[in-house]
Length: 300
Image (cartoon, rainbow, N blue to C red; front, side, top):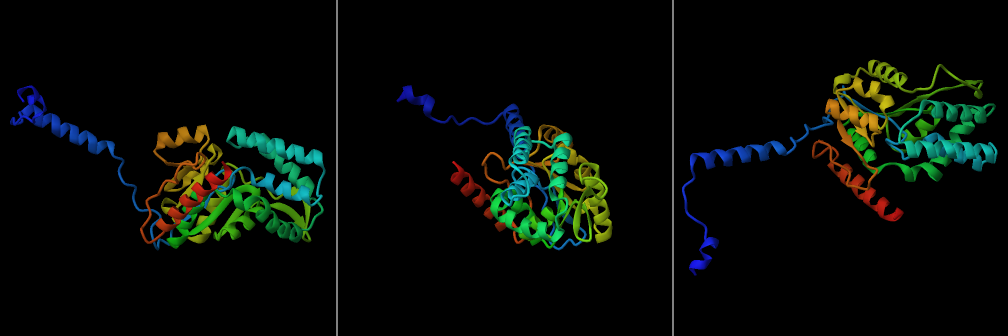
């Protein structure tokens, strides 16, 4: 048995150096465990709200493209216009970010298509198009984040460069408070083919959030904002709780430099749990995770 002596634990007292080594190792292990995120959203905080970008944050792809598909189905424009929409969508999906030139081209196309149509007509069609093309493209993880804010008693707004009519339909279907979007000019309820001001993009989003927060009596340091695009850094920088969701490379780099929270739902991985009260949204996050997994399996 002497040959097996090396398997028997040796009873030796710890030296000062071994104690020091053990304590140092334990301290290093403690530091390697990420600190638990503070509870957020805060239940009952009526001075806080959440602002969500739409395209590639709440919805996979460009909402304007999906809207264009629905209009094409209803004979609003011809095949060559659909091909242009398809190219813009493909570029958007491959680049993973909003190119201002392509987004402007898409908006110009949409404005020319709806010119002369009644606002009420587009609103009604928008409801149908949501069911046909948009509902299944909502990211379950982001939807769960929005629900967590709602469950905590906070208002939740979409903030997007998409037409406000589309944004309002999506916000209503998701049970959100409302939406800020690009406003197309209309006279006597008929679209003129022009915009009121400029598209709600980049700095304009930040200004819209600032104006809405002032009107609602919100404290921006207690609010949250979510986006996938570096173009929305002005909006994200306004709030005390910025989140990079499915971020493009520039936003990911910026978020890491400033220690912003990151969430990525594009890979099929489990939706990460944000620090929220047990009674205010854990179930929503779990539901969003389950839905994400089911969606991933169905598409395989």
